[in-house]
Image (cartoon, rainbow, N blue to C red):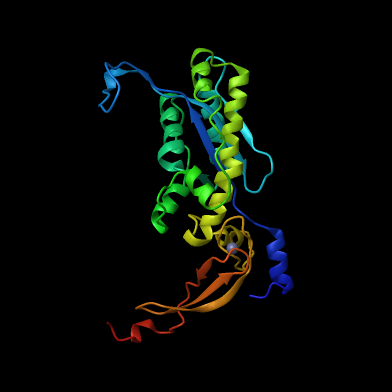
Length: 273
Ligand SMILES: [Zn+2]
């Protein structure tokens, strides 16, 4: 596809794109009773209090500025969860590292506790899952991956674990809340978002940008990767048992995307393997 074509240029500039929400949460400790340290099974009746969400840091698409939701001065996260629901309703794609099992499922558990109606969280690009699926690194932590890929390093937890201790005693302590949010925000803007951008041309995303554009009447395909907006250039033909399809490469991020139209006009004429 030719980016000099005015129709294509206009479509690209129009930038019809999904709402992409990058998130990370910090939660409080669970509190409970146990007889000794070390490996053991902690049963339900030993748990006095489940973890609550202290803060949730998020940023939309390519926005420079992120935002933070906090629990209230008594350590109640109901308002935070209600505010998250509003974000989730607006988001077409949520991105987090271990975001599916950790962040989103903890948030869902808190929704259930607070009797909040279900929210449509349809697509999550979990960077941990993407890494597991397509690569083999010796470690898959956000910190390790970002160091190896020269993206950055995780900030040190605020005063070791002191912040969590302070907030356990004094949930409204502003200084502790601010330093925890700073630590969390660095994970979102400094590490998670650039990591996802590095991974996703290789792994693909859970959504295809073109579904938004076509719905809005712009029928010119661009790179399907959210937030890329690159143009597609013919790369090669992809052959399968049942047909042949045009394959394109995105000029901007390198992603390889295939047409769905079979170049074999009558695939039923093909002899079966
Ligand atoms: Zn691209």
